[in-house]
Image 1 (cartoon, helix red, strand yellow):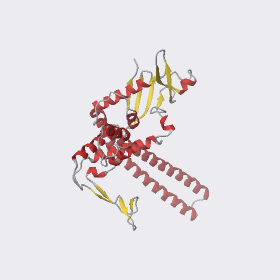
Image 2 (cartoon, helix red, strand yellow):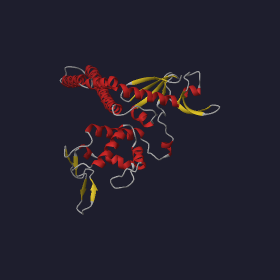
Image 3 (spheres, one colour):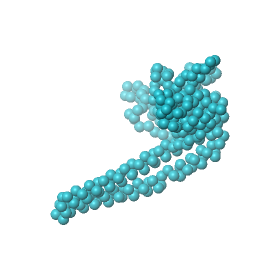
Image 4 (cartoon, helix red, strand yellow):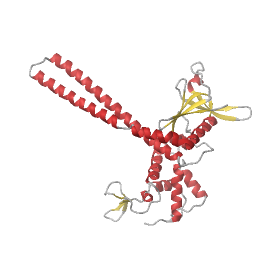
Length: 335
């Protein structure tokens, strides 16, 4: 395989665009508007872009037998009917493995998060901030409203509890445009200072992600094994008549309760390890994005959905962006 310079530029652009926060639909629209030719000289579509992003050949690797021919010489997509083979470093790469993995992680993340099929009415009425803005006073979610002034209208978000009863929660509404401005300000700060914020944070996450937890789990598993041995010994003692039924039941119940505590501890530690691993993944995605993009001048709903978990409103002038990576950033809003 040899590189086609003209097509290479388009492929690199597509990967750069997806990592900068653009959707596959946006990328396809821009390529069509610019009349960039596709491989088959047809219109670019979202599915075409996704196919390029999923093609491992751009990393220099090749997976053989993605399709196969049956006994009637018909071609089929291989869903496990026959073995596939990976040949790493098969040819010269034009996309790094890190960019390829980050792009596909981003695509999968978006698909999982949206969970609503595009095109239906429910999707069209959905807003990125819906159920994502939390009141710092009462903990309720905010509701989208249209406010009218003498000469214009604007979108605002108000606490549901406050709307029902102003005495139950005193939190005032926050303007939609001010939230979006604050988000872009926060994101631009990360783009400017990611080496001081995200890079050391990622190192801390990676360094604290395992050894002590694994040792603790191993110790608890040893205690569970000892617990089982003690219960087996009690059973033998009762069978041989050395202890009565009442004492046996008391000691066995105590050991069963202790074993359940050990298992709960193991489950809690495992959940914690899974959470840390998720934070590492999210931090890597955010770090890769902010280190490969320029400052933003306009809000993007996709960026919010990709990297922010939710918003906490502390007052009309102070909101907090809780990111999927585990960090929280506070920004001022309004005057």
